[in-house]
Image (cartoon, rainbow, N blue to C red):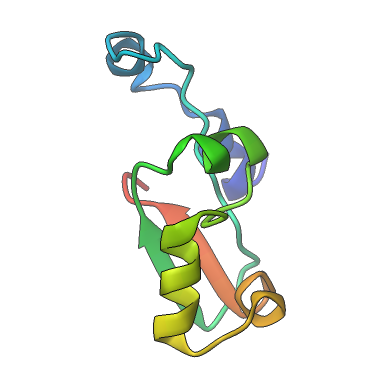
Length: 88
């Protein structure tokens, strides 16, 4: 099993998610290849990201890419930009 698989399979916070209004199951969103030059550590993705499994596919992602001065192809190139949930 790879590090990505390990992170995606994590369910430590299942009880906390069950106590929320949406009661959804945790789904850590991981997006990287070893050796990426930039690491973004995020938290609490909104529902669109949780459903799609693709990080920052929401207005916060638009703002982040604008701040970074990169377009979607660069941002979503896993060999360049790594995105990992804060807990990991």
